[in-house]
Amino acid sequence: MMPACVEIPPGRFLMGGSPDDKFANATEYPRVEVTIANSFFLSTDPISVSYWSACPYTYTKESDPTLPVTEVSWDEAVSYCDWLSEISGDTWRLPEEQEWEYACRAGTNTPFSTGDMIEPDQANYLYSEYGETVGTGSLTAPGSYAPNAFGLHDMHGNVCEWTATSWSSTNDSSSPLDSERKTIRGGGWDYLPRMLRSSWRDGVPHYTRRDNLGFRVLREAS
Image (cartoon, rainbow, N blue to C red; front, side, top):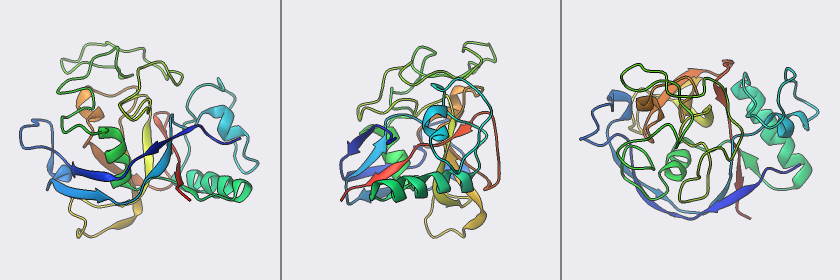
């Protein structure tokens, strides 16, 4: 049961917070130019309960099979990718942090792929910047919101997503890495818009399980 993917073309982009983004913090600086040398395939949606349940090495609580799977540790997400590789003969893995942001931005340089702002009808998040409840207050099925220019759903909101990258406290690739913590991206259904920005990043222990944390998968081009 292979996840649906779209091909992400090679290119260059500015990774990290822009100087005029009032919500960017120290972990998102410095802003650096990154080259994505090779195309890759990324799942159009976060991995759903139904796709996750197809793997014999996984377990999840009973829930709607159309919703993104959550409460999955980084190690389990990696094991799922290994299983996909085993049964398909292709190389599947979690995206690196740079690949994730490149795919999220989809050619944009603004805080969101939707522009300077994001609205409740464009992504699943719970609170406005004024603390008002504006979202659904729960996970939503893939396709509930329009995709970005690359054809990817839910790069902003719904679930935070594991990446393959160990955590560093800045956006500088030469910063020391904490192998016990892994970088997550995208923001969850219970977040504020500022935590859904393309450059937003956080690091959590690899064994973390949360009801707003899932993942999507990358297939390397042959």
